[in-house]
Length: 249
Image 1 (cartoon, one colour):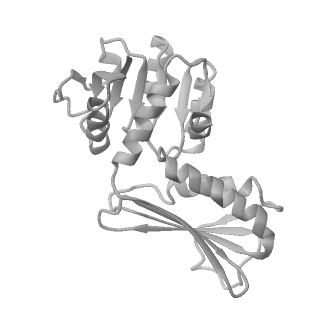
Image 2 (cartoon, rainbow, N blue to C red; image 1 turned 90 degrees about the vertical axis):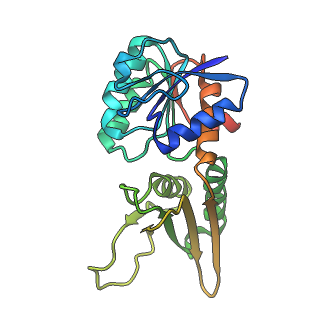
């Protein structure tokens, strides 16, 4: 039985993770962390440093500002960590990599199995199409999302760049330019509106033909299911940085 602490326990994703775990028999929630420390069928603390219960894994859907405290806790308690929070800067990503030297950490920009399949399909398409097609990525999310472009859009672009014949530049904003599109660039475009859970589209635009790969998340549950699967997978693992690719191999 995998014992789980949820950070961001009373938020939308925290509640969704709870409902997923409640339906399983291979894991249980022993505690939660949330600034709104209302109990949710388990004790909830305002800070992870206050948690008294022992756990195997922390599932984090909180805020990037809490990363340092979170990494200190898992190192002190020798607990694995599944990071579902997005919006980290480069310095914080380096902190995560450093922490993975002493703890098992699962870190991906998107917990959806479908998105990770999309990344693999995009790489295959890039290998076949070469530099004859322009590549643009469009992502759409709800109007409460702060970071743009999404971490998932960047993950998709990074996956494509692994197989491009030439180094690629990410282009986020063309409105101030008066020049034609550069061949060695990937355009990334963010749409924010309503309650869109998450949509990602990769456009390969060639001469007189367009190929589009896309993924649409219809509820937050797909991310919660992925996070819980990751928690069970990473429990008991050796220190290291893990992602969805290792879990589905």
